[in-house]
Amino acid sequence: MNQTTAQSSGLAQVHYSEQKFYENFSVLYTLPLSNHDNGSLMAIASFYALLFILGTCGNAAILAVAYYVKASDSRSKHNTTLIYICVLSIVDFLSMLPLPMTIVDQKHWLSPPTPPESWKGTKYKNTNTILGFWMFGTFACKLFRLLEHIGKIFSTFILVAFSIDRYCAVCHPLQVRIRNPQTVYALLSTMFLFTCVLLFPILLRAHSKELIIHEKFDLEQRTITKMHLYKCVDDLGDTLFVVFTLYCFLLAYLMPLLFMIYFYYGMLLRLFKQARIIQQGITGRGKQYAKKGPTPDVAKENLSKIPWVCTLWS
Image (cartoon, rainbow, N blue to C red):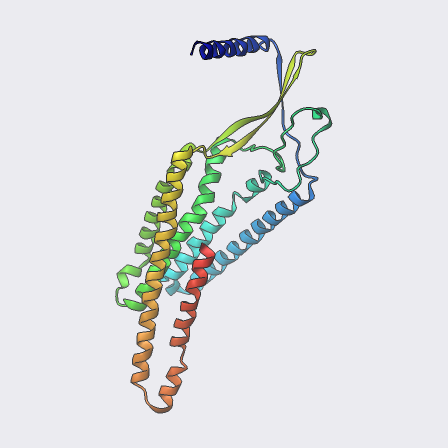
């Protein structure tokens, strides 16, 4: 016991002496090299840039078409489907905004670049990113994380609301109040606030954190050169990260998936039931035409999409 205490005391004294020794040293800060000459990394960055351009242009085109339809037809102002499409396009566009920052800070582990000449012979750690650091600050980091997760969670809630809208249109067509624009906006606003509540830990903990990836000591010049960078981190901690991941999986993935399956399944049952009623009320050539009519085909087409939607969203 005494030996352990003596060793701890000795280490503390050595650490204190080392701190005192380096107090008079000048500290120089440097940034890691950019990897703009790394072919595989630039290919990944180009792919992200292409996604950003296509996503931005695609969403802009959808919004332009929706605006044209709304301006040319006065009845479309009460079209709830158009509202859902527009809001979904806006959310998708907002989720595209962090892509340029992701491109700059994109990690890559395929082929690390050669260390700079001045750092040879030392323990060098390269970050394998285009710039190697987060240069946008803490506020942009919080906004980056918020937009990144809102695009995933809120868009899922919008799809749930859209499935409810389709279900009401098919199964309860006389309940007009449920599908008016005011109800839709209120539902979407509630879902957006719920999304912000789910993401509150990210919004609270996300910040730009300084990391020292290497230190080089020059005893002759009495200088310490520190290679540092800033990274946008969530900093949730192990316990909070597990809790956050678990409730996001349950509330933002599993439950919305079950809701969509329930409402689309109910809608398809109603379509099949209506198709059977139509077939029973028609005889002869009309009955043969009804069997080949659009209602069963639409129902089968929607039913066949459910497994694909589940697989892709998984």
